[in-house]
Length: 522
Image (cartoon, rainbow, N blue to C red):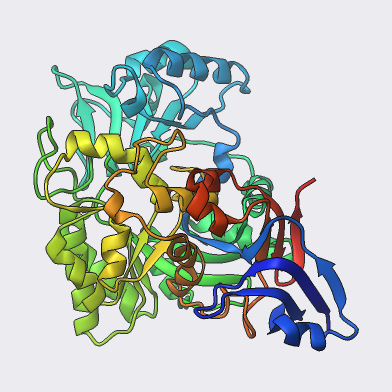
């Protein structure tokens, strides 16, 4: 039996009453005593004096794409480019360093940040991609910018019909522009490609996540990531706790293999099935009840309602929890309809709506009535607030409405949606408490009535995030809970009153998972 006494003047445990302590006794990875009792019963235990200004529970990202994030480490980063010209120069420089024939991928371009915020076309990309296929994803992952060679190899022409739930954007003469939205992105899957093994990149990503205080995640990516995580776990190299989602196309495979949500151990577990109801705000594909300001149409329904309902019921009836992506108000309304059917069937399936960004006020109580978790990402709000004002405007919606949801008794779990946003959870805590960007704008916060307290935000990144995938054994530093904790360089609760903007700059000094050191800042 391993026994460790952890000591620090400021340990925030997350307990609902008397949340502060100065000592934790950990046996075989779990907290068994705290405070004076921990000290009094620690005979023979190793003593660890934790560094920094504060110790708190390890954080859980409830929505992260780690395969996508890992592979982005090998691609060009276009997120901060401020014009098409700057974007193209970054692509050109990156392409020059690639082996012959290697695909140009990822990128995370964001035309909404450009001086002229117009989506680009294949002709511009052709000028810098040379004789290689280029298929660059937008920052939200709901649009691909492809070059002419990619369209040619995929057989996409003016005569190719739009797939269900997607759009091949065309110019005035009917020719494809190279912009593929939502399900149309999958038309490129026929292009042969050889990708490097995922595991080495995933190990680098794991180190990154531990270094920012994440001790557990709910991963949204596909079967390649599942296999890589299983291999890491079998080799004893998985230090994060991973709840692994199944993607919609793999639902039948999961059922045939007998997967059930919650299967696994303390480290690697089967999670929910992920469905898509709509697109994203930045791509103008979020499914809305009214058209976007200055744009025709109300976004895209990524899946016909009857198909979404059928898939949702298939998962729930086979013991798999369900998380469904819905950003627009119409998408949220429809997904709640599918969840009503689950509850009417008498199923106690865990249900989440991913993002829940723009919701009709009348639908907020439905989350509570159906026990649906709002799985949200605070930094989406601060990244999108100008765009939301521009294309949604003042219409009456609950937008990034964390306070409204909590006040209505809705369970809220927080994450990052990385690599759409940075995975650092302290960026999310800052956004939740201030509703401001890193530059302190807008003054007072965007729609400040939706701010939450630091304690509420940490709860959403710990206890609520774990509970949203069925875990009640981790998230607090109290007896019986797994000993996942981080030591940081500043006291967040003191900053909440004096300088909440400084929460964003928190530095993690140590990360412990199950009472074992997983990261130490050098």
